Amino acid sequence: MTTTPLQDEVAASPAAPVAPAPVAPVAPWHPSQPHHELAADVRWWMGAPITFGLFGRLALDQVAYREVAAAVDATGRFEENFTNRGIRSYLWGPLMLFGDDADRRATIERLKMMHGQVKGKGRGHFDGERFSALNPAVWKWVGTSSLLVFYTGYVTTYPHLSAEEREVVYRTARWMSEMDLPSDASSVPRTVAEMEAYYEQVAAEHLADNEFLQWANRSFGEMPVPTLIGPRWLHLLITPAWRLLTPALSRPARICAEAAAHPRMRELLGIEWTPAKQREFRLWTALIRGARRLLPKWAVLEPMAYNRYRYERLRSAYAKPQLTSFAPPK
Image (cartoon, rainbow, N blue to C red):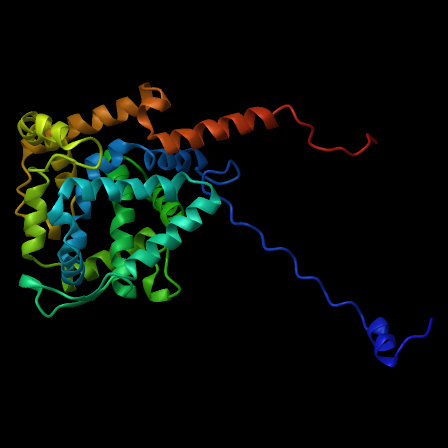
């Protein structure tokens, strides 16, 4: 069979080097990583409803940033039913943190797409304030604040961590929740030192009082009956008990968030931290630590996180008796 000059040239050419397959980064909780047990504990901390319940109020710093407050106020979804909005926000978390890779990617892309619809001008108190949820500076602030709900909650509950251990806590929380836009300006700080410097800069330049911030702060103690599940008659039936119990049930969350809040947020919210509150906070954190240590995982983790926990335990059980090599013995 004859060949063409072009074929001869190709055959004589050295083979192009094959690029090595990209190496997947190693998760902080992998046994090969330093402090992997601490990273694993942080991971399951992020899968516990009590974490969001007790420290979610820290996210009020998001709406101390005027552009964020204008955007959230303009959507009207908090005003419609503050409790429903909080539940919806919470339910995004398990999908992003503990879904399989395809579900996580789809959830992140859907969140970005839906946030892209949040743009325009403010109303009322924010009249004339332009906002866009995909503004890289805003995205970075909201992403950092959301991550800090978990990081700050953990290091406040476990206050005797070393600087190196705190770095592991932060790196793990960032690994779990990373969803940057294609812009360096939107990236959440990569280290504790960078995060602290960034927060101080935002606190000095952007965090200020506004009507929405104060309304949201009050609403945490006066949360309406959730209406996402069940018929209207049931909502009406439980309303008296809900109104009676909500102030008492929300107190642990208020105390924990006040204890962990940045000084600028304490100033804006008029928080007076007293020795009595400090003693109460120590009680709540002792109960949190005890519950996480003594209760079974199914009682501590939300269902999606517990499903992931069980899956990984079963995977390890299946893999444990397997051979490490199929090669013939030497």
